[in-house]
Length: 376
Ligand SMILES: NC(=O)c1ccc[n+]([C@@H]2O[C@H](COP(=O)([O-])OP(=O)(O)OC[C@H]3O[C@@H](n4cnc5c(N)ncnc54)[C@H](OP(=O)(O)O)[C@@H]3O)[C@@H](O)[C@H]2O)c1
Image 1 (cartoon, rainbow, N blue to C red):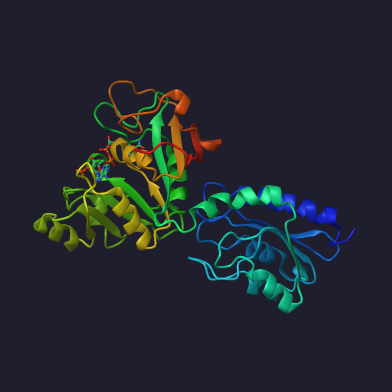
Image 2 (image 1 turned 135 degrees about the vertical axis):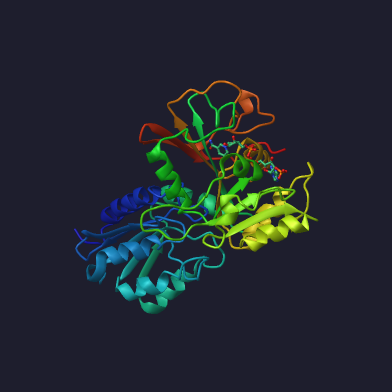
């Protein structure tokens, strides 16, 4: 059997799809992409997938895995290799050409008009055979969410909360440390490592005084920390402000903020940006999310309490949810993940492609927030 056998290519594409799915919930709004490299005799010599937002693309990872064994072989990839410089990564087509493969098989065309179809011309010019559409039924859904998010002027936002088995995010006294155990908190740090910004409301800073940094062994950089604080009531001593020279902090407040408080916060290195007020008199969410996007925040993690999480869910800014459920029962009158009105069960938003995994003795439930969910 040779690499040109249709069966071998189909099997490689099925494996590439499986590889792509391993990054679900960690790379969006980028597409899920997997790749397999076949040597000239049809054996698999390289595997890769787009594992993290901002990380190497699948074909580059697979070609790196294959090394010299890629020469003359076939690259099987779920998505047409990109020919343009993305938000975080260089184009893949030059790396594919450099690898020496003689054939590229892609599952789907790139929905991004900036690169769609460009690979074909580049491969043709270099004498590399190129075909698209093998395994298309399995490959197209891997790019569907990416395609819908193209052109968005707000970040892909993940709402994360940790709750007790009876659905409380804090006890009656407002204490939430710690509902979950250390392994779940490690996963939170791993998720923070995949985003450009972590967003909370003033209430969370007041209650928990969190650092909101990404504390993983060997990792020094953290995402931008963002606090929505309408009247600039966050104390300058709050850790998220006091440590702004080590990790950037942005406080989003409403127009005509208290100049003295602003100066105190800025003195500690945090940035303050004034935005219009929304309908409830608070920082306007549309302005806040657009401002984040304008600053290069394409993937954000909302780690707020029930007030801001509820406002964002109802206004339709959340694309993905990560819920940690701990085997503890709190009872009392503590807050639930989001306040305000809900939905009748029959109309209630149901997470799409839900996945439950264990994080130590806690459970992590993840899923995409349905775009059809009603907004305010
Ligand atoms: N278990 C968990 O996962 C978890 C996570 C976070 C917090 N918590 C707990 O939740 C409690 C704090 O809850 P919280 O709801 O007060 O925190 P929050 O949602 O982080 O902050 C809410 C505050 O954000 C400000 N805000 C600014 N613009 C807003 C807008 N457009 N919409 C909504 N809010 C806006 C508002 O205060 P201003 O208008 O005054 O600015 C609002 O009161 C604490 O007990 C904390 O321990 C638990």
